[in-house]
Length: 68
Image 1 (cartoon, rainbow, N blue to C red):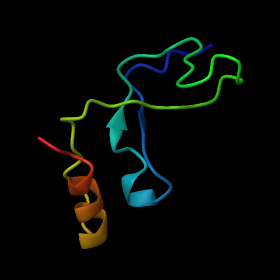
Image 2 (image 1 turned 90 degrees about the vertical axis):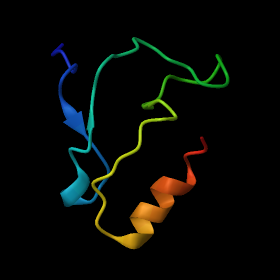
Image 3 (image 1 turned 90 degrees about the horizontal axis):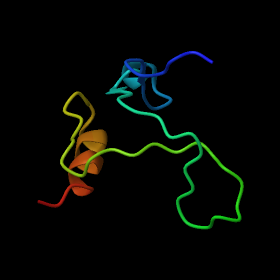
């Protein structure tokens, strides 16, 4: 298995497909129900905001999820 730490990923829009850097990996993280199968998920700190969006809709969406 390759080490994912330091690699980048993002959303399905080419301009943003490298927006975030992987800084850690869980072996089998289960978010809600421990009986459900493991599925891909990513977590980021609430204070981490991506400032690279160019479209107003993307900017406002990013801003709306951050409450300080």
